[in-house]
Image (cartoon, rainbow, N blue to C red; front, side, top):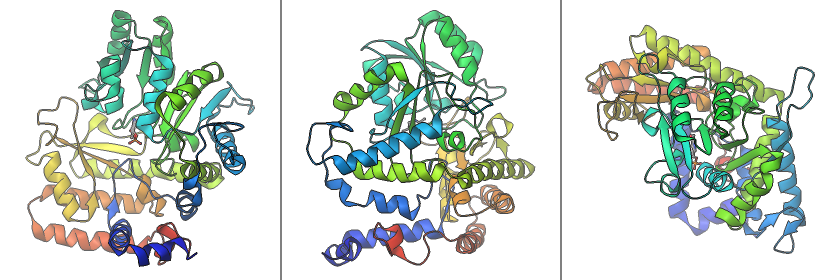
Length: 436
Ligand SMILES: *Cc1c(COP(=O)(O)O)cnc(C)c1O
């Protein structure tokens, strides 16, 4: 049989052509979407493999299908590496708690749906961060199953300093006696204080769940506090700062794992994506290397440098800065909306997303904020100097959002920068799932 990559280009030029174009977009545009990253060619090779052919419902050694011996090996490697990455250790290196993991959730939303099914009964109350203040749809939005099947109550950020309002969290917890308190966010630039959340959860006898979809790579790299042992259960994606394939992961204190496993299958999913689990195993292996700690540290240093320069250039940031990989530019005092800025920056080769800010006065389709993050540019090898330069280019574009000449100049500079920090080399096969 032909190599799968050449088979694709010959058989289906329409799909292949679009994939090539997407590769070039990733190579030549600057990716500042805080939830995106570039998986390694090894991760992509595993994701684009024959493991997609295999049914493996159940867990290793307890499958509902034959022929699972090799995918069992793969899933066991993924599980062991995930545990090694996220088990919290004390000063002498001893584990602080015993966690179990389930590597099968198809993505972050599926991990959260299964986690809720494991921890709650229909109609149970839970607390989460409001979507408009940086929370996620799966934390109780009325359009998501989490908001339809359970009863959510939302806490907010304080408007004066952009930090989580723990007084409100405590008041809501005392008033509503939730079964679960969820911490974790999609657009929160500050470190999460798991210990304080746990204190509140203990006071009202609730379970504490962290959704570390955004910061998992920072936790794995040792630059953000581990949610364990404070949390009872932790969900994450594997494709954001963790830099693996698009996927989800659930980790929990050992006594909850039986419920977690049955909530994933048969509770919310059928057959696991074994090719993606193989890619997760490869990514976890990468994240266990010392070089990943260097990466995570650089992500945070780059974000700090970018934030500092943006503020020097007169832009406001929600909470006045960042502790992690992302920041929120607050345009509520500006004529330029989040939507305008997203379009203008996009035309200049800088990909960002508009975002609501605390106290938002514009509509959610327009918004007054822009979310930017450094995980992807750091994977390209960019450092503090480039992060400051990019902040200048962002400020130039936002300061002259209608000026075509500024956009064109910035676009040229961005392309030059991307060429100086290439990804996926010249060989598209390595990035399109086909080896060299
Ligand atoms: C991205 C994200 C998710 C959802 O992940 P998907 O893989 O897109 O389903 C869930 N929770 C948080 C906090 C996220 O940021």
